[in-house]
Length: 158
Image 1 (cartoon, helix red, strand yellow):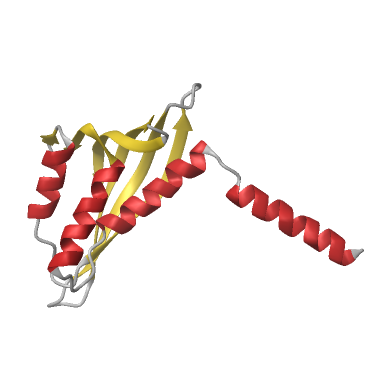
Image 2: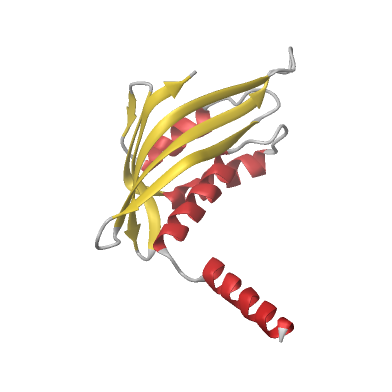
């Protein structure tokens, strides 16, 4: 009897975890985007090229990104800006925290607010450096997958 109850709870837990959900899809995309944006300490040329090629799948072709007063208005321009940026020695990790996902009634778009944190280590002093910004993001469902159409940094957190 106890084994049956435990098995039923296990099946319910697995079903809940893996049952298709637009909100879980959006959150999964954000987690994978953070991983793709993170740069390890040492990065070969092939890994560098591969990472930025993978980033294309997260953004709409006509994406609009605004950070620090700078506006980027296409996926190609965004990827170009990311590839030209020099990462600090030792790399950095990108984390998205405090995510709030609001799906549209028709489930074709999502409004997301979150805090984007870039965590690195100053190699001279050894101290951890955190740059955190509140972000407002809009994602839409295109060809059955979620892509970012707009992203705007709303505030820098000190």
